[in-house]
Structures are given as C-alpha cells and as structure tokens.
Image 1 (cartoon, rainbow, N blue to C red):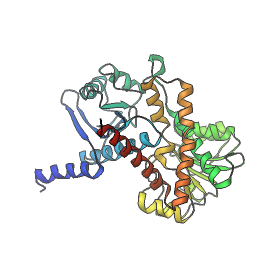
Image 2: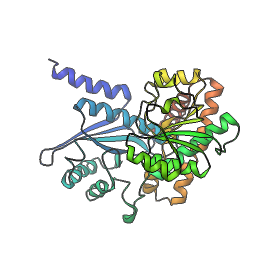
Image 3: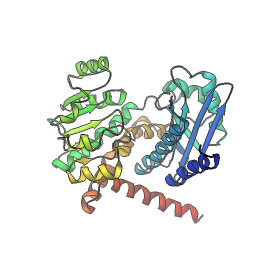
Image 4: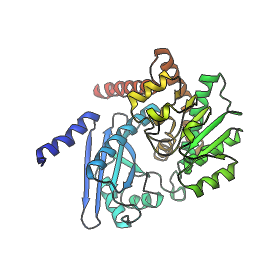
Length: 362
C-alpha cells in the first residue's frame, strides 16, 4: 500500500515537472463539488482557462488532465501575443447527471476566493448557462452569452484561426495561400468543425468529413455538399490537408504511416500522441504540422476580447493574425530544421522569459 507521504510527493513532483505556480482542490459536501483549479504561469497576466466537467476514473486522472491542459493554455496565450497566463479547471462528475445550479455557483465562489488569479470559461461538459451561474458569484468568468454582455459562442472565431493557419501552411508549401481546388479532410464536425467546413466550402475546397455521430455527419455533409468518410478511413485519403477537429492524439506512429496529406492543421487539442517522437517523424516525412495550440487559439482570443472590451471586428483581426504567427513558426522550423512545435515552444519560452525579466527588475 502506498504511503500518504509518497502520494503527496507524487502530486508535488507533477507540479514541479510542468512548472506550475499553484493548484487548488475545491470540495463541498453539500453540493457534491469536487474540483481542481491549476494555475500554470501568470508571468504575462492572469491565468485564463476553461472548466471541464468529466467523470474521471480516478482523481489522479483528473489531476494529470488539469496539469497538462493548464500548461497548454500558458503556451496558447503566449504564442498569440495575449497578455494572459495559463490555467485550467476540472470538475469531477458526470455533467449530465451531477451538474446543478448550486454546484456551479459554489464552484464560482472558489474562483472568487482566488482574487483574479484564475479566470474561467466553457470547456467539455460545461456551457454558457453554467458560466451564467458562475457569474452570479464572481466576475472572473468569460464566455457568457452575448445577450448579457459576453463574447458568446467562440466556435466561429476558433474556426477562423484554424482556417488562417491552413492558409499559412499552404503559402509555405505551394507558394500561394489560395485554397480553391485543394482538398481537406475534416475529422470531427462539432461546432468548430462545422464552422471550418463552412469557411472551406466558401472557397470552393473539396471537403471530406467524418464524425462519430452519424446523424450529425450526414447533416453536415448534406448542408455543405461535403463527402462523408468513416473515422477509420480518413487517414488513408489522398488530400492536401488533414484537419483533426475532435479528439487529441490522432497523430501517432500508426496514423502518420498512413497519412498521404501534405499539411496537418486542425482545432483538436494535443494532436501529437507524443510531441517529441511524432513531431520529429512528421518532419522526417515532410508533413507540415501547424502547432495545434496556436491555430486553435481563437476560443482563447474570444474570451480575452471579452475581458479587454474589444469589438467583434478586433477579435476577428486577432484571430486572423494567427496567419502571420504561423508563417513565422514555419520559417523558423525550416531555417533550423526543427519540428514546428519545437519552433513554437521556443518562441513562447523566450517571450515568457523576456517578460519575466522585466517584471523581476521592477
């Protein structure tokens, strides 16, 4: 049996490995709330990240997830030039069975007690109504409905970022960022996937779509005149772009050996099953990979705009700027012969280090 000391050390070892500032464990017996709020880095500004509600198998799984995701938010904010740090939260429980107004409001009070260190938004298992409940207890929440002064649904802005990331990759490979006549396989046609399909079809792109929800798949294929394929077959398509817009880790040794695309660019988080191994393998196979945490940052930009009071036009401009940042990363990757995610990480880490020096000297 593992001693309590070893359990404690395992938790703190994880914090040290990923460089987290703090982790808060939130528990309330009356509402059944069990949540973890992880703040990774606030060098650039307050930590912003969504609240995910899932029925994790173990509390250890929940902790690992929130630590990994919060670190990703730091990198996402930094690479897009936002004055935000990275954080994330998870609520342990089935969102369909255990979520209540009281639970979400109690959770909001935990956020309030962090005094602005962490600002939350929607994620898997939470929605705009939940953010409304949280807003009743604290101001440190974004992504509330537009009708009550929020930024509304972030999916269209996220899709714009992915679309411009694809165009930047096309410019690098083909010398022209026009996508008309190109082919794109979109895996996952949820809200972001659908918005991306819409943008691509407007430019007369040949679009293939797949999704685990067959009814949704047929609906989107018919609506946008896209061609349906199964999830198993999507890796075998001879297309210009593979756009993963659903689950993470779809880029692994098995799928890389199947892929016939020139570009990988989509909205899914953590697309590389193993960053070091599979980033290097893509480089060796001359498949251009647009770092996911950059081109899917539109949702974060949308939330940041809500905090900063930006207009919709300015929000779209910030999302479109993902094109230029992607171009810079691709140039650095090519010049130094390093995987694109490594080039992106280096840019992020330099920006954070530079700003940390400025603040240290105050």
